[in-house]
Length: 123
Image (spheres, rainbow, N blue to C red):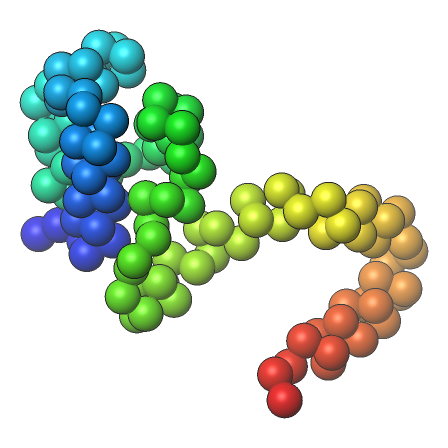
């Protein structure tokens, strides 16, 4: 049985493909796949690898996150870890913070992490 997140991603793939007026064959050709593989992606019976999702985002001119938009809250929470690293890397301040953090001695890293975790707790 297909995972709900895979089904959701597949539906969003089909939606953007139709909005861009591309056939399954058009998309498959750009990816070097068969149109049957695109069908399987769209119904969620085959999972889309991260690298393939990246290629699809490039083809359609959307972010990778587009494919996950509209996920119900439970699935969104289950999938949240998939996006956190990407989101951090795209944020200039977060990237700079990670670089500075990695250059600190371990004892200072632990102290800074404890402080950041205490500040990030919702009120």
